[in-house]
Image 1: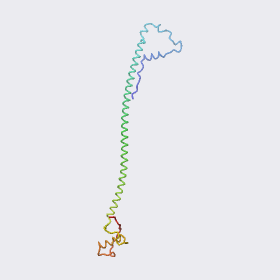
Image 2: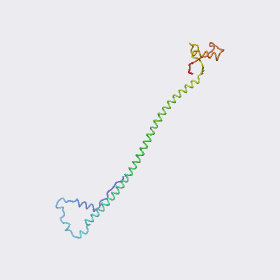
Image 3: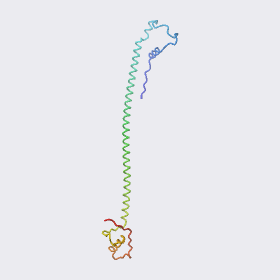
Image 4: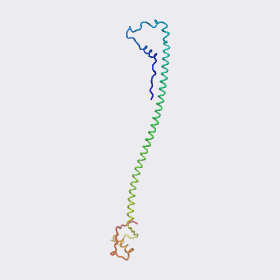
Length: 187
């Protein structure tokens, strides 16, 4: 910001200020001769009061013009600064809004990623179970009635069916057939 300096007082203004504020302390310091007792040629050398007042008025008007110009420039600069501040404030608000939106979006994505990870773990377990089942030798028998020889276990029923239908020439005693798991399935 530019600093304003008042124009220096002219010598005449300083003399006027000194004359207007001068008060003699003692009667001895007061001038003995009055202005009327001065010779007429002295009056012609000194400027008249009207001339001094006109010069002072002109200097005051010049000072007022320079102060008005400085005030106008200062107001213009303040207007530019206010415009810049308003622009920056708007820009900061937009950036803050974008950051807030990004954080909200990021939080939603983190929640979705967590849900997907959980779902992926479930699917991996199902896949592992399916792979384990596919590696075992599975046989499926359909149409076995619920009341097949009452008192028999499912294992006994399945082994009898295997021996009767798949290995009719062998007996249970001379085979090394082992049933690891048997269960009933709806169907």
